[in-house]
Length: 179
Image 1 (cartoon, rainbow, N blue to C red):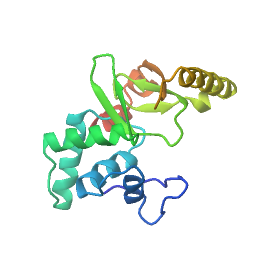
Image 2: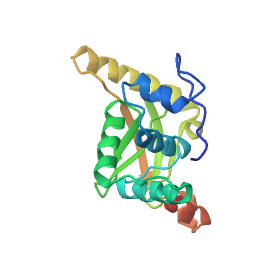
Image 3: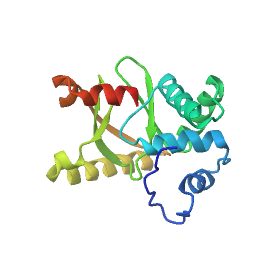
Image 4: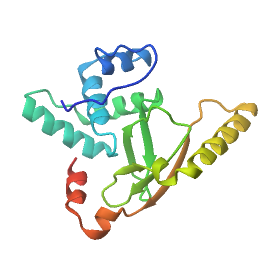
């Protein structure tokens, strides 16, 4: 399995961050859940369709001699991980669902989604001075909705288009599409 980036959440064991995340969100620590969450955490900048994730995990299974996840099990697992907030589900312009590991702080993280390679790039650094204004605006909107009784909200601020690598035909496009 690919290396998982460190997870900085209060009260979670650093010894096995995937098990700790699953337990903290009330999920069973099955080998399937560990594989799916581990893969997505190891590839945080890329969003995957169900089929792309199944192919990636199958390639990993073949290399490691592991058991392949069937389509339905993967669908159910992705759904559970999304419901508890460990995965972010976005629907692209072709109405295809794409999944990626949920960033640790999601109030209003602006991001750019490339419609070609589907790489997801945070825009916080690019927006620097305006990022704080955006965060405050998101917090105000969420607080106003919460006062009206809405619950469990997250805000997705997305800019969609074609990234510079894909626009110029860079080799990163092919690499990201395969991952």
